[in-house]
Length: 235
Image 1 (tube, one colour):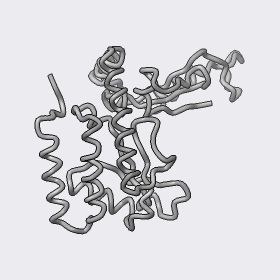
Image 2: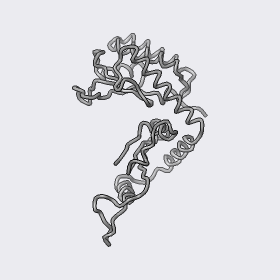
Image 3: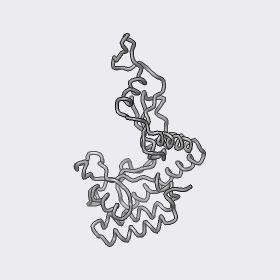
Image 4: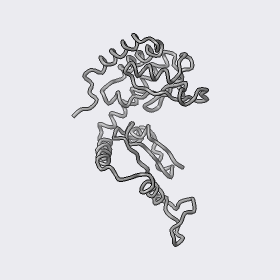
């Protein structure tokens, strides 16, 4: 059994969501997203075990699963290691062990809950009705706009989101009927629950006027005003 926890890994690392490692043979994750590190990935195992595929050493001894994973990564799929990225991962893991990181993840979750409620209040259809983590998937079927058009309009208005398929989507993965939004990045920049209402109002304005260039420019200006003084990086 394999679990991929790329999106909620920061929430899992801080104990906010359940840990799959005691229940799964292999767990994979990225080191960015909610872990807030550099772009990269991890393949993790609990207790090692004989591989289930019947692959053996020359003497007939079954190869351990850890060995197959190691060989698949290098020399299979990976070239030379990037030491600067390894160092950046170490910094990110060190940050994840600090009490401040747990405070950050709790704020991410509170912001997501506030954002989800603000969307529902404006008659947006959230898949699962809300969120228990840092992100939400929104079905735009009742908003007369595709996910692709919504993404493009939001980008023009200085808001980053991505199109996303929804359950039983009738549109292609290149068009989609939904968008996905999350609160990890804006929480890093210092936004709180009260700011989520403002953000959702701006997103709603874009989606409701996605072909109006003036509205998109006005929202973009409002976004810059909201984020002014909220640095992307702090020393």
